[in-house]
Image (cartoon, rainbow, N blue to C red; front, side, top):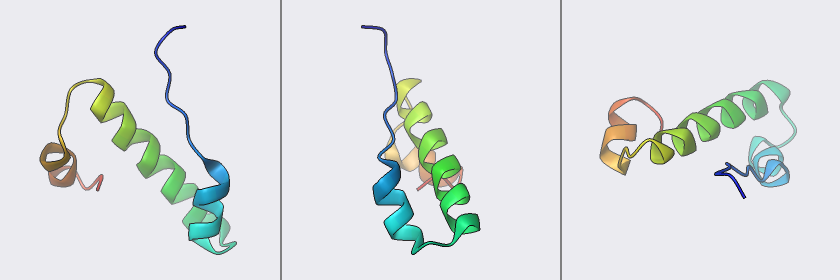
Amino acid sequence: MPPQIVLFLENLWNFAEGDELVFCDEVRTTYLHELGHFFGLGEDDLADRGLD
C-alpha cells in the first residue's frame, strides 16, 4: 500500500464537542501535523509551526 495518513474523525468530532468550526480547525491541524511527520519533522519542529 502507498503511504497514507489516517484521521480518526469521530475522535476529533468528540474533542470538538459538536462545534463545527473547532472540528474543521482540528482536522486541518491534525492533518498538517501528520503530514509534517511524513516529511520527517519532529514534535519540536511541529510545535514551532503551531501544529502541536
